[in-house]
Image (cartoon, one colour):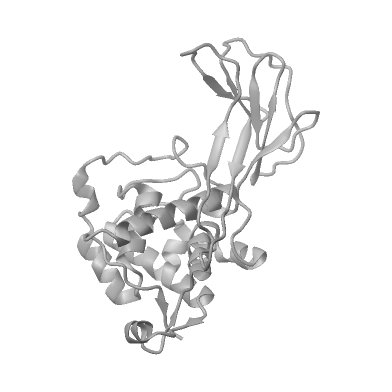
Length: 281
């Protein structure tokens, strides 16, 4: 199994590119069925064989932020989130706290189901309004919504994040959200949280006339500070403070890369305004 997570630093961009590739090297015939199951001791097995030896296993204390993997001689690749005992186990993936511990996709309690093109414009007014209230660029809000829920307000992740901007319940309540599945409330709550994070991490003075005109007496976010804001939205501000920037979680690194990529796409689209990362002093 290979895991390739790379960060390129270029100029003021703290995170220019990231590739997260997971490949299971399980011997298989072309078109062979892959069978998954969770064993009582917490091990998740993936195999192309229907008969799996139940005797092998791991033990020890739970470490929910780390997943291990090993190849068995019979072709089975085992995964576990329990600290394993025995040889040949290698760390496969490290996740962070809260939202950063979720492996998105099939693990979602309620996955995205809205496939209509209309969903991309359904919340336009709310996205415009949040920028007037909280100063978060429309393009960034669209990028976060696209990555978090694919514009489906009913999504619930495996760790309990809810709605368009996948607010954790405690965060939503702190941001004044009473119904996380109400699109407007969720967007406003998520934008308010991004503003809180921007006020915490953005310390770059406006230096150009354009910046000063847009921000007044405000501060703006440098590229490095943008990364901190987005990473904190995913893994929590404590993780960003602890590591002085991007936390060493593959899930968060992949998340930040996807949001920045979508941000660039929406920023160049006539349907979304670029705005500026702005925070009051």
